[in-house]
Length: 194
Image (cartoon, rainbow, N blue to C red):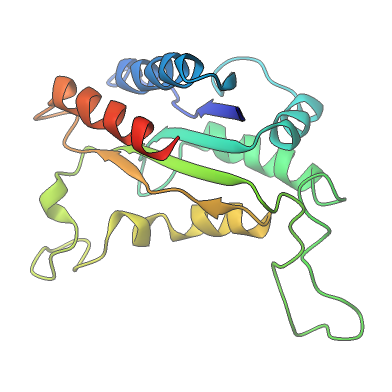
């Protein structure tokens, strides 16, 4: 089967301990191992180092990023991980620079990824309700989708040459949580895509 790196990007806050993200990571790990996949888990709030981070990305056939959405993006602790691990990987472990060549410096920006043939999946937990997305009459997102909001994260993985699997999202997790339904949907999502 395949090697799957699961990154739990949750950062603990007094109002958010990370139980849902942790449960989804555990569920993914159990479901994937039951299907014969090898898994590794990185918890961003715990100790990690750059060399192991690079090795994990090279080892993985698929990366699952399990993250809460904080201020329309990932928590700062995962951004720090990206800044350190992903920058260190620009020498060939994740990409060869930015993909441009001296003979054509204006072309192919971002096309230097060395993780081609690998996939990634975003699994997101939102305070926002599902109805806030894909509806032009909604104030904040103005018809944009979850994937539109996470376009920069998609581009980070594309920069490494990776291809996306369908995104999973749990909505309204702080005010109107439906954890049991989220777990059922997540299980089906994992079964369908792996």
